[in-house]
View 1 (cartoon, rainbow, N blue to C red):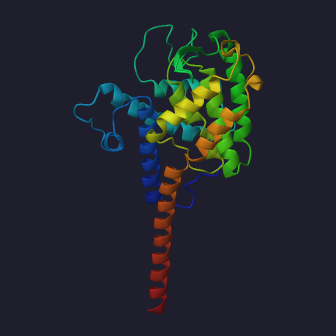
View 2 (view 1 turned 30 degrees about the horizontal axis):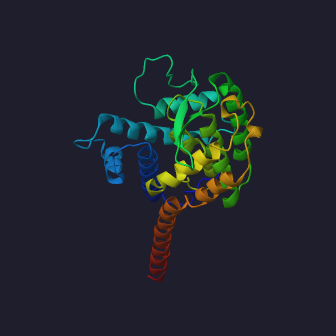
View 3 (view 1 turned 90 degrees about the vertical axis):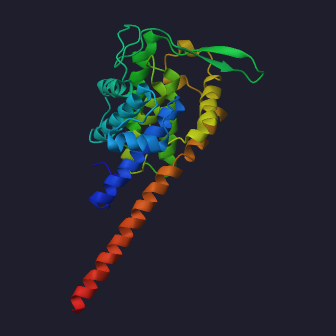
Length: 282
């Protein structure tokens, strides 16, 4: 049975903690992709069910979609294995726009090669082509086996960080979907973390540039990325270690929220014990 990070908390305290983490996780992950809603806006939208005046409808839809995806992540913890269909369901939650383009499928692997642009250390712009669409299913089958192995291990905090970093980095390097790969990676890579009994790693918006740069720098070290057909060929190098080190700092915000919830729980227990003693003395 999966150990949850919120075990031992009273229901009302647990409910508030999970809402706080949901709000933070949703805000940061969507903001990294350009969403304009603040943390306060995100909490307002999710808790009150209302919109924020002057903000794009698309931004509200992304918030609701990511929140639903977090619920799916928690439900997946009850399973002992992650399936391809689970990823497709999650992708449907994350991408809320109704798209009719068959070359931009929602809830299915990409149909065409996808690209991104990057700037080299010498200031030149380059193109990066991710693994071709024909290789996606093979690579993602490997990825699913790997994350399942992490999922079913007893992980220390250090090993949980490494599991997160490995799952995250390999997922965005495969780039299996036409869109939403970053949000998907930041959700899915937390499965072994949550299964090990830790709160999720959440990347602060202030770290957007170093976070994205670390991923890009790692991918720049992969020769023939478009033709990658085996995850075992991915390099374990200085750039990957740099990404792992970055991830080790992404516990801070959720750990702070958890520590505060535990503090409130501890105070409540002390009050209960004190009241029991008073009643016994009467």
